[in-house]
Every structure is written in structure tokens, then in C-alpha cells.
Length: 138
Length: 163
Image (cartoon, rainbow over all chains, first blue to last red; front, side, top):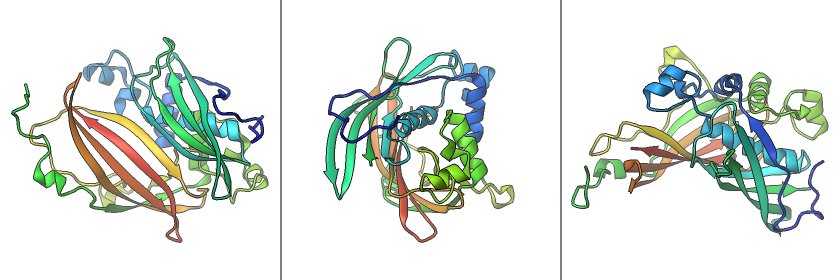
């Protein structure tokens, strides 16, 4: 169910979006985004650059946070801004939890807006892509 | 090893590039590319796959999911992969590795299949830092995407780290 203006409160957590990337999903993403850097699908290449494993694309985690927000606001709302930093690596076949907390609810320029703190979280509970976002609600 | 007495990594030639616009790059959004992007993220919302569902939800066609700002036209005979970023001279001391530091995208209007966008980019800032990875240079690049009517539809700020 999409969020409604009346139910939104500052401090509330929005529904978590759970991801767990197969290596196949990383190849889909390479094609979908046009990022074909081999550290994201070629183990030998990744090891040669000093990594232990192939890693999940930072921009895919940014897109996951976009989905977290889209799924929350629905098509009557809009995602207005999504920003995050890539602070830690995530790996395939590992849970990535995408989360958000409402930090501000306000009206501006005739729009009902909500600011959120957003992040992806690894299985150890570390925020690997912290950021913030703004959405419009109907 | 670097120390406080060492000269800045960032040369005058590099600083002179800050704010200089590069491009333009032409990017296409079509139904197939929207579906591929949405599938690669894992969306289940039919608006990204079914044009009738998208129109029923009020979009002109399949909307571009957050993070998708079109695909640069690939033409090997025109040189390169299509996307032209800002040019930047090399730092004073070589930096071998690259990390993506972050992405921030602001959306100003809907972007839908059938749109053709034009992007221009400029380096917004250059910083240097001593971090756990040693000597680091942080480049912030701002890219503005405009539709066929010249209206800005998205502004993306990317952070690149070299070390």
C-alpha cells in the first residue's frame, strides 16, 4: 500500500525493501545501466584488483533506494531526490536491507513533501550507503 | 609517501577546468531500456513494463525508474562509448585506483520512454585528503539533463574518488 499524507509522521520508519543480489542480477544491472566494469561480474578480474570477491555496483544500491521510495509513495507520488554515499562494499548472495526514516514533513510550492534519511544495511548492520531523499505525496 | 610539505595534488591546470561545461551527450529512453533497467533493479510495479498500466497511472509512456537517465547513443564509428564527461588533466602525482563515492539525483519532471535527453557536465569541485587509502582526490561532477524542449528534467551530482 502506498503511503498517505495523513499517516506520515516525522521519525517513522518506512517499510524495508530486502535485496539479495545473485551474480545474474549484477549482469542484468550491467546491461540495464551500461556499467560493464569487470569487478562486478568477473572474479578473476576482481581478485587481480585486490578484491576478495566481485562487488555490488554502488549505483545499483542507489537504484535500490530509489525503489524503496517509489514502492512507498506509489505512482500518485513522486521521488524528487535520491542521494547516497558509497561507504562500504556489498557482495552477491548477501542480504542488503534498504531502509528509510522520515525526517521532515512539510508543504512547499503547493506540494506535500517528505524528507527522509535512507540507507542500505549489510548483514552486520553497517550502513553501506547512507544518504537522504525527498518525495512528494499526493 | 606524502607529507604536509608536499605540493598539492591538484594543479593550476586542473583548477582551471572547474565549472567548464562539457558535452553535450544525447541519451535515449525507450520502452525496452526502461524494462531492462526496471528488471535489473527488481521492480514488480507494472508501470515499468506495461504501457497501458503506465498511461492509466498518468504517465505519457513507461516512466524511467529512479536512477535511469537514459542510454547514451553507442556508435563505435563516432569514437568512444557515447558518454562524454568533463576532461581533466592528470594530478601532480599519479593516482591508480578509482572508487565511486556517491550519487545524488534531483528530478525536476517525469522522464518517460520516447524522451531524448541532452546532458552537459562540469566538475563542480576538486578536493584532496589524506585518508585510510593514502592520498585521495575527490572530484564532484554535476550533470544537467534536459528534454527536447530544453527544460531541465534532472540534475545528477556524482562523487569520484581517486587514490
